[in-house]
Amino acid sequence: MRRRRIVLITSLLASGIMLGGCSTFDPTEWFNTKKPLPGERKEMFPGGVPGVAQGVPPELVEGYREPEPPPPQVAEEKPKPKPKPKPRPQQAAAPRAAPPQQAAPEQSQSVFPEPPRR
Image (tube, rainbow, N blue to C red):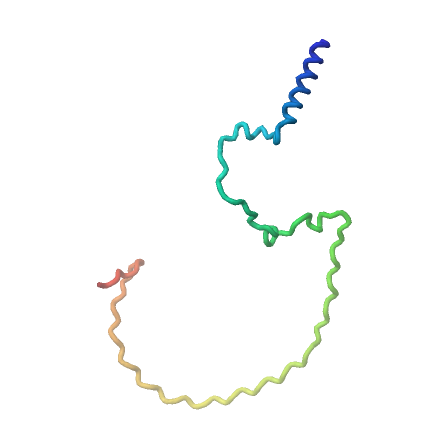
């Protein structure tokens, strides 16, 4: 029983010392066979995503009070301007002679449009 504890403690210390020598300890690197794409990495939105507020919304902060609505503004009533008198109707000119109409092509009763003519 005592030997098991000693072996367990020494193996933990040895593995801790071995891992302490590593610059980075990332077990996902052991199984990752993909190579990263070449090129420089840049932030897509360096100032934050446009239209999205950063941080915690003020409604969720403790002690938040809703802003008081502004007092209603009293609209001043302006006197209505007098309506303008209606102009007198003028006598209409004599009707012009209608231009001769061209013969309209017959329209089919089909739901589909006519094919183009060549």
